[in-house]
Every structure is written in C-alpha cells, then in structure tokens.
Image (tube, rainbow over all chains, first blue to last red; front, side):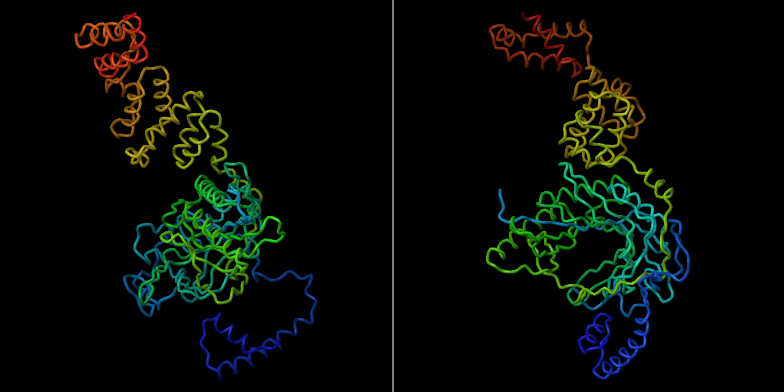
Amino acid sequence: MEITDETMNHLAELSNFSLDSSEKQALKQDLASILRYISKLDELDTTKVEPTYQVFEMENVWRADDIFPQDADREALLALAPESLEHQIKVPKVL
Amino acid sequence: MTKKYEITIGIECHVQLSTKTKLFSEVDNDARGKEPNSCVSPVDYALPGMLPRLNGEAVKFAIRAGAAMNAKINARSRFDRKHYFYPDSPKGYQITQFYSPIIGAGFIELPSGKKIRIEHAHLEGDAGKLTHYDTYSLVDLNRVDTPLIEIVSMPDISSAEEARDYCKELWRTMVYAGVTNGDLYNGNMRFDVNISLKLPEAKELGTRAEIKNLNSFRSVERAVEYEYSRQSKLLDQGEKIVQETRGWSDATGKTTPQRSKEAAQDYRYMPEPDLPPLNLSSEFIAAEVARLPLLPHDYRAKFRGTVPDDLIEILLDYPSLSARLAEVEDSADKKIVKRLANLFSSVLLAEENASLLNDKLPEAPQLIELCTMLEQNELSSTAGKEVFIKLFEPKHAAKSPRDLAKELNLLQENDSAALEALVASVLEDPATRQAQADYKAGQAKVLGFLVGQVMKASHGKANPAAVSEILKKQLA
C-alpha cells in the first residue's frame, strides 16, 4: 500500500500530531516499509482463523460495585495538568 | 394535517446507569451536587499504566435494561476502543462495545400500541464535561466512565409526536427497571435524533441529519418539527440535504450545523486488550431478568378498565404512586383502586401539594382503609383529602385513617336521628324561613343553601346526601 501525502495528513490529524514536512517525509517512508513487512501476512489464508482479541483465555472478569477511597487526591491529579482553574483542567477553547 | 413528505426517524439514547461506582474505576458514580473533579481516579485520568476494571453491577444493570426492552441478551460480548482526541476524554479513546454488544434486538411498545424496534444496545463509558468560556474551556472529569447504555432504535418512528412518545416510554421503561435515576435535567438520559424526509412514492430513504444531545421530550418533539420544515423547504427548492450533525437550541427553537468532533469520522475501532470478554451463562442472565420489577406495560394491564387511560398515563410519570396503587390493587376491589387513583391525582398532582411527592407515601393498608371510609360515606371527600394529607406528617404517619379522622373530628355524621335533629334545628332558625318558603314555592335550587346551613351546623361532618333527603322529606 502506498502512503500518500493525503494519508499522512489524515493520520497526523487523527493522532493529534503536528508534523513538519521533513518529519512527514521520514514517517511516510517508515510507514511504507512497516506496511510492506506486515503485508507478508497476506500470503496466508486466514479466512477460517478466529481473530485473536485476547491473549489470555480469561472471561467474565469483573469487580464488586463498591467505592474505594483513592490514594491520589484531586489537587495532586490537577497538578499534573499544564493549567488548572477552579478545580478544573484549563484547556484552549474548544467547541 | 397531511404532510407532503414522509418523515423517518431513528433515535439513539444514552442512559446513565445508577451503579454505585463507575464502569471501570472504583470511585463514586453519583457526582450530583459534588465539586468538579472530586469523583475521579487515576484510571479516569488515564495516567500511564492505569488499567480499567469492569464493574460487574453495570453488566447486571445492562441485562435488566435489555430485558425491559424485550431484547435478546447476548451471552458473548466484548469491549472495543473508539479513538478520538478531545479534552473530555483523557484516554484519547472511549471504551465501548462496537463489534459485539451485550444487548441484541428488542422493541419498545408505545402507549398507542405501536412497536418501535431496537436494533441493539451496548455498554460504554461516558465522557467528561466541558464548560466553555470566552478564551478557554474547563474540564470536569467527574462524569468520565459513568456507565452508559446506548440504545439504538430502528428508523420506525414517523412523526414528532411519536418521537416524543418513544423517548418518554423509553425513559419510563428505564426508570421502572431501576437502572437509572432518570434525571433528565442532569443529563441522565440524552437523545440523538436522526431525521430524513422522502416523498411517499420514493423507495429509498432521504439523506438524514442527526440532531445531537437533546435532553427533554419536548425538545425532541420541537427539534423534529423544526427539521421537517427546514428539510422540506430545501427539498421544495430542489436542493440537497447535507448529511451532518446539528445542535438544537431551546432558546431559538432551531437546529444549527455543528463542527464535527473528528474532521473525518474515523474512529479506528480495535478490541480493548485490557478487558477480557464476557461469556454469561443462561442462569446468570435469567437471575437478573427475574429481578425486573413491574414495568409500565404491566401497570397498564393492571389498571386498565379500573382507572381511566389518561389518568394511568399521568400516574405512570410517578413510579412511587404507580407502585403503591398496584400494591392496593393486589388486595382491594376496583372501586377502592379507582378512588385511590383519583385521590392521588386530585391531591398529590395539585400544584399546592407537589412537595408531598417527595415525602413517604402512606402504606397500602392505610390507603385501603381511607378509601373504604370514603366509599362508605364515613368521610366526606373534603375530609378524606384532609386525612390523606395529614398522613404525610411524621406525627400522624403511623396512625390508622379511622383513628386520625376521629382525632381530627372529621368522621361524617350518618346517624339518621342525629341528622334529623340537626335539620330540625336549622329549620327552626328564623334566618332560614325565607328559604323554606321559596323552596315550598317551587324554587328547588334553594335546597342547596339549606343543605349548606346544615353542613355548617354540623361543622362539615354531616353526610350531605343524607341531609338533602331529610330536608326534602321535612319540607314536603
């Protein structure tokens, strides 16, 4: 599969990356070679193989519905954000 | 009114489940009245290395919600990641069930009898809440990963009114099933409405617009009406409908295009590797289904023929009233049930008594006794209402209505000798002489005045029907 500039721009946008043109060129080549490598798998007939969703054979793993006190308090968590205001995370305006 | 275009509507509804903790973390799921970011764990914050742990109760709630929608519960389901970047989701993806949802096809039956098919419903985590200011936005993560079920209807809805009825019936069903607090004002249930128009003879559906995030039945109805007029004008002018997401404003009564969260709808779904799949036994599913309480259609079946249909629909908006009425229905006859339904509507649904709805309802045996007393004319209807209201007061709450009526001196006087004496005393009063003469002269309606005088003399306790009979006899 060929990676076009358009595909690169789309992927960058979806991943929330801003890339300059030299980065884009480099990544374009990397991605193309990764896809070439992976495409080796296309040689196999997998139509009758169940996809692997999980590598552990576990099912029905859940917890009880009980509230547990958290070690990390609100201010400690908010301190991890670049900016906060009124106990909330402050971000550039989005709408 | 006949409309030129046929309208086709499908609705997606997000229901917040009222579990104690969130879907994937062990923090308080009820953030009502709590400070922003006070119900948040490192898992909700998506700190590196944090792993989701599934809340088993949310799985059980989903089973009950599904059964309440007459849906097939899928034994096998699993979770997927839906990727997007937005400040309301620290993980950068939402955990949802894209490929294998827990709830399969079902239906909701409207009060009109029409069935709206449910395509499927799935479990997922809610996003955080953003508040927008002039130059910045603030993020509150209290709502992150509150358990949701998203219920996807088939495009079976064909009018604004039907869209409202569907949302209301879905709300009732979820509230009666006990899976949500159903507080619409606080966003416990939110509706996305897909609307398209086509000419009746057209075979294919038209292009649809999706109106996002409606949170009242009225706004659902109004948004559909607005979209009909917007889309029909465009079609009349030979223009094309753009497939897009639109927002609704209650203030302007209009929908407007919204910039999409993701420029391209490319969510790159992938199986969630951190949550093992569900494979539920039929016993496990059956045990949850068996816990379902009575649902709106059960109540309708119970009350139909005893209580007028429109009153049933009104009472269904108040789950505690329907439940108590059903309890009374189990052990009392129809007359009593009907009286109680009327008492509920005339007293509790009156504006001035609205606060009583938040208080503890009198018990079924008390209500049966009260309605029996009314039925047997031991209490006038006014006195009956008074006793009923007093039963809500903590100091009277444990009393029998009969004792309370005695204590308040409200028992109706039915003893004929006593009533005859009362009537005689009123007729001896010179103030009633003119009225007596008028009545004898053929003015029948003066009787009402005389009955009123006897009632007054009895301090409201005389049985007015009996008084009227005695008066007629004595004045004949």
